[in-house]
Length: 321
Image (cartoon, rainbow, N blue to C red; front, side, top):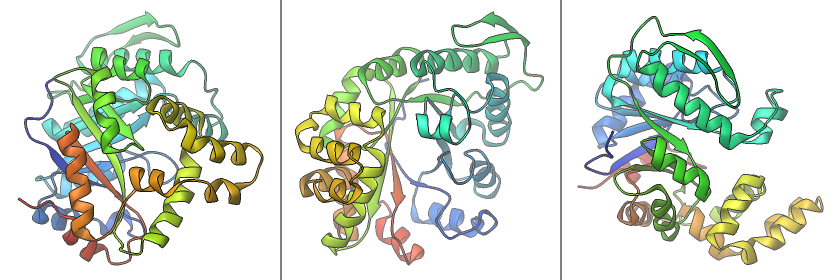
């Protein structure tokens, strides 16, 4: 499946402080404002599928994406069924990201060994693609065995399948075996390096953290806490070493390893925060998002942080034609 002909500009759902039952009017508001997509995640809040099922039913103008569904926390068959069920509602509007997630999510929160994440991701992607195509699968993969599975409700329009990818090997798998990659925690200047690994003609989606405030000190304080929470996870740390931020982030990693969380936040340079977290006026934030799109991101997904007036933020950040 080819990448989108036009760049997509979307929002991460669900919104903080808004129940799922109250999202219907927000989906309509986003479509009215010109947002192309809504993207869910699956970490420690809602599951990834329910918000998209509601969006699919309530607002047909929005495309839908999941970034990402962990490949460990559901069995292969159940994951294929969940995707097929959502595809039955959403049709060609749907994009599903599959990913290894992380040891904290998989092991600490779900009690599942986080073993061979690359192989598991590769095997689940292969299984899901074949299952959605209607195959009967009876096979021993490297990381699991499936005996005689076939979806009893065929998928009329299989979704685009992306891989959550951070380093060269997974990025190359996204280009070779999937329809593209989902990126996270990167600057516009990093996009080209990632796309070079994925290869041409593939979709690149990226979640972008946005703090729409002109109070730079507050934005950077929040951004530092987010960075120390995420980029100390081994997969993200290795990603940023590969991107060339080892010198800038080593003091944070050392302080974090020593258990000094306060020091870990203090030593993150302003330049790193400004690279990885979008902040400033609405106009400045939109311009920064445009940098990602110009750099080669096909689907820029804004994750709103610290927003008190949701309607004003949606309107202020909305794409301008």
